[in-house]
Image (tube, rainbow, N blue to C red; front, side, top):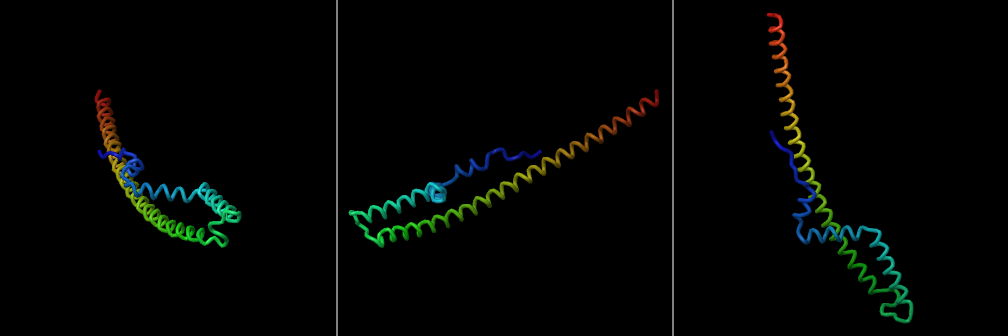
Length: 137
């Protein structure tokens, strides 16, 4: 009789990730959060307030801030592509795991069905033997 996979796929997958893959996941999760958006808006507002006051290291139109925003946008694009590629790999691995689990379950069901069929045959044989034994007495 075949056995089902008993390991937790998610735990095994998480343990197999490289340091770069874990970092990409953390960055993706961080940049896709409301906390990041709130902090980013607060940072830009603080930048504008400080530069509008007497300490103006980047006066309006905030060329340095635009440079930083462009660099962040470029990095975010690359990180999102890495994350999408990783998500595709995870989906493919999960699909394979589901397929393997379904195949194992199918084999178990076939084995159980065969056991039930054999039990029915034995019960029928017992009925025949008991019926013929009762008739001869």
